[in-house]
Amino acid sequence: MNTQIAKIPLRQVQDVKTLLHNDQARQQLAAVAAKHMSPERLMRVTANAIRTTPKLQRADPLSFLGALMQCAALGLEPNTVLGHAYLIPFDKKEKNKKTGRWEVVGTQVQLVIGYKGFIDLARRSGHITSISAGIHYSDDELWEHEEGTEARLRHRPGPQEGEKLHAYAIAKFTDGGHAYVVLPWAKVMQIRDNSENWKTAVRYGKQQDTPWAKHEDAMAAKTAIRALAKFLPLSVEMADALTIDHDQGTRVDYAAFAQSPEDGPQVEEGEEIDGEATEVEEGSDEQQDAGQQEAPEKTKDKPTQKTSSERKPEAKEEQDKPKDDDAGIPPASDPKFVKLFQDIEAELTDGAPARGILKFHEAALAEVEKEDPDLHGQIMSMIREAEAND
Image (cartoon, rainbow, N blue to C red):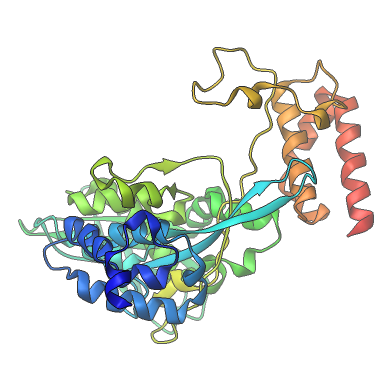
């Protein structure tokens, strides 16, 4: 039986457990794995990841394999107490045209790089001797930060129970030089607030389920390292990791990568995805990415009245046709206001709380009220109706 499983063509593998014993899957891993990464060990580590995050067993096997191949290519072991990387299962959703509701159509896997993973990758350039990150609290024993010709950064942590003031990252180079970045805490929060994952969490009132709520210091340290990366001689692996890291809202078609690794990972856009993972039990806040987290829940845009030159060449012809549920929108409305109407309608349909939607779209709704009172009235009526049913 095991021999039969091992010889099944990759495209015919039906589940993740079978994948772990498949010869072709091992060959794909070996083809892309970093020199120090053993496909056999990666499979064993992955088996443990499946035990700690059971939902991974339900993932599309090719999506799972593609994400695992990306780990192998980066040379990072996923879902371990090292905190280097995490395989996160996500429910892919599509809108049911008949009911108007978003429905789960499958489970896919995305890859999140931990801040320790970024540190490991940065060192591989050969030009960096050390790299670290930290958080400055108001009750720390020492903090000296000065820019200009006498630039310097010194930090001696204290109890770290006070107010968070800065996040920083510093790298030392083999030639004796160094580089660092210091981000005021307000800037850290601004970066968080502008991330797609956080926007989605706010929209659905699920901020407490995000890594930022559970492991804020670790996420802030990761933010500082990403900012520092702009000034570092990057390894190829580090550059790739910055591109595909799911924490920034990136979604990669790992199923396609598993089948055609020579094409590299392809970034997807515009899909409705929801995800979760089980936190790694050992370790501390440094396992920041293994906690349950929500992925970007961007709703698929219903077509607005675009010219043919504005449409994407690959869009299906049926997507260019007006939808019946857009019939109530005033035809003269600004396209961006129409899209706002459609986004809010989709969010309400998907069960987002009305108050959360009002807060998230507050600025945009104020603009609609000023420029298009009729459409604003329709939107508010729709929200009030949903609020009455919450």
